[in-house]
Amino acid sequence: MDPFKKINIIEYRDGTFSETTDSVASEKLLRIFSNNREILSLLCTPTMVKELVVGFGLSEGLLKAEGEQLLGWCSERIEIFWRDEDIEVNLPIDIPETTATLTSGCAKGVTFISNEKLTEVSSDLKIHIDMIFELFRNFQRKSELFMATGGVHSAALCDKNGIIVFAEDIGRHNAADKIIGYAFLENISMNDKILLLSGRLSSEIAQKAIKACIPILVSRAAPTDRAIEIARKHSLTMIGFLRGHRLNIYSQPGRIQVKNLMQDS
Image (cartoon, rainbow, N blue to C red; front, side, top):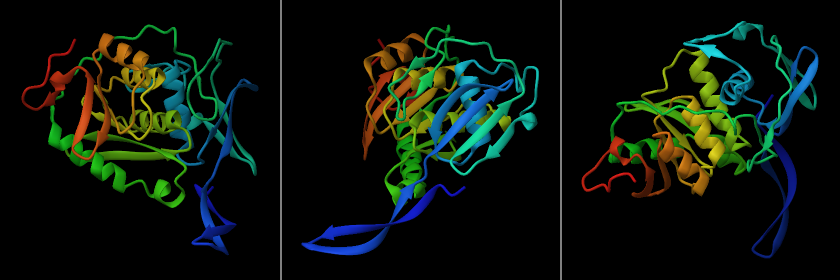
C-alpha cells in the first residue's frame, strides 16, 4: 500500500481558484487478532506493519521477550492480510483480556502499560550536544512523507555515526513503535542509542523509551509534566524544544557533553 495518495482539489491562492492535486497521507485501520479475537484496532500509515505490531506488543507488554528472542513464538509466524480498507494481523499467541488506557495520542491511542513497573535506564552513553543538533538536522531532511503531505510524525533510532532506521506514521506512538519493532527484529541493541521524534513527549512515549532501554529521547516538541517526572525517576535523558541551535534538557543532563550544564534534580 502507498503511504500517500494524490487527490484532486480546488486551491485558492492570490484571489484565484484553480484545479490541482494534493498529496495526502494514507490512513488505514490496523486490526490485531489473537486466537480469532480482536484485541486492538488502531489507525496507521500502511508501512512497516510488522515492525509496528512487534514494537507495539513489546512496548505494551503484550509480547514478552528474553534477550533477542520473543517468548513462545517467532516473528515469521505473524500473518498480515491486506484488505481494501484495513489491515488484519493475526498473532500466534494467547493474549489475556486486559484493561487498556486511552492516551493523549492521535487517533485515540491506546496503552496497556500505565500500571506496569518500569526499571531504571542503565547506559554509559555520552554524546556531544553538537552531534545531537547534527542528527536532528539529518532527521528533518529525511521526512519525505511529511514534506509531501504535512500529515505525519517521524521517528528515528541513531547512534553517534548517524541514523540507523527512520519511520513515519500518522500517529507519533506508531512511529516510535515501528522503530522499536525494527530494532528488535534486526537484533539492534538500544541501550546505547538515541531516539529522535517529531511530536510531543507524553508519558506513554517516555515509557516506551524506558521499556526499550533507550537512554536519550529527543524531540522538537514539548514534554508533559508527567513525562518529565517519569524520565527523572527512571534515568531517561529527555530533550525537548530542539529548534535550530537551542534545546531544553529536562532530565539526566550528564549524558550530554557540554560545559556548564546544571546538575539533574
